[in-house]
Length: 276
Image (cartoon, rainbow, N blue to C red; front, side):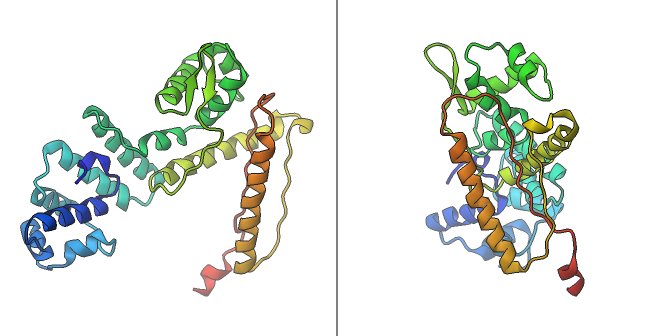
């Protein structure tokens, strides 16, 4: 069984803990429940399946039943908080504590770098900008950003991008991308950071309405009524369009400017909610 610091889902950890014990003995969900002080023999099974949640006191009892060490208990509790949190800020706080605990014990959470990458608009911008300006110092890169950031911020971002494997240095000392495109994939943690990214990029888009000349930006919108089937078809069309845009952008190896394309489709009414 993997070390607990390699997990991001406490439910999966409980399921794997049970499976691991089961292969070594006649361990049962009843026994597991008894050790954690639950009367229902299937309670922890249902927790692992997502049917029930753990309370704060139950979290402590389950951690004790699994014989977790002090830092492991703290990590397990943060996983529970992350899973149960309804607000993005609470999820971010819990996951950042998980990252801190893992870092302190020299364990790399696979989703950690992806989470950190999508937490700030500076990361994707510098990832595109640095390779297009060979030999540029952090101060020059900082001045090229919109809005401007500091040279220290650029240095921090570059260090993170190299350490996380998003950029690397070639023989000349210039930055090159390890992959042309990035995607969030099926990870369970990154959507929280991606929503933060969308908020930041949305604000930058609003600032660009007045701060960028009209011949250097393109804003358009349309309001319409649709059905659920129509919505699904439009979402697929947007996905296909985004792929075509990326293909066009990747045709040339050189970069004149770094652009952001926001594609937003959202409801302006709540008729279905009223029906419910």
